[in-house]
Image (cartoon, rainbow, N blue to C red; front, side, top):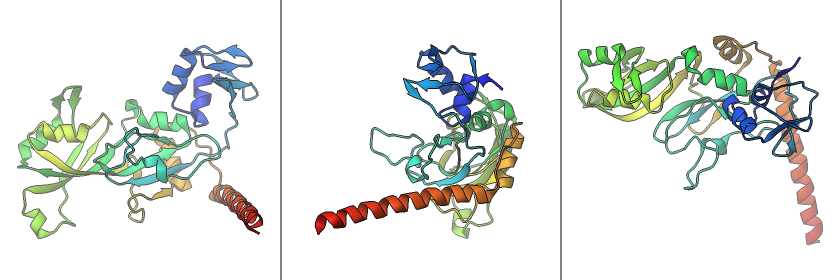
Length: 286
């Protein structure tokens, strides 16, 4: 069955649908030798090229999704001209496609970031129409009272429209008495959109300063306590299907043993390549 070209490119992880559409508009995509137009469709058997390079559009049949515990100081770009660390440097390599981040966290924000090789899934998870809840732990400096919390939940005017929290609750359980009695207070907030720095801007609109911010949940996925800063963990089948469900996509998922077998085969291939290189070095030295 034919599908729109930009959707094919997104599904196999080559980019978001918006990126794929821009490539088509720029005349960089061709199908069977003909320059593609936005809205054109293609079959899996068609020869699709980007910038003159034939693309592999045979999807592996299952979707990989992982959670990453982002430390402060890393940026959510593939390359940084200033030489700063990026979140992609710690992710496993893919033999096909690429990792696509589900949204972004700014350089001073830590916590849960989801990555997938399925562009269609990533695009839907980021789309505002699905109103997916994001949960954060936030430490603010300044006086917070109930009228302020009521305003934050009812909605306040920001420079890009009305913003609001779905919930705002004190988070005191795991904090020391010294911190509880200080001017720094921890809150657990949820918000159903992902505008740039919106959590910080909402608190700043009330005259208080955010000095720590950590995302701990995205939709049905919570940051696991066993995933330390700078580490990642693949989602299991149940977690992955739950993400497909909230954005009304049919989940095509292989059993975990097939995923791990694929990972093991790629790891063994690397080890064999390393062994071959070491043998060649020894031969040269003798």
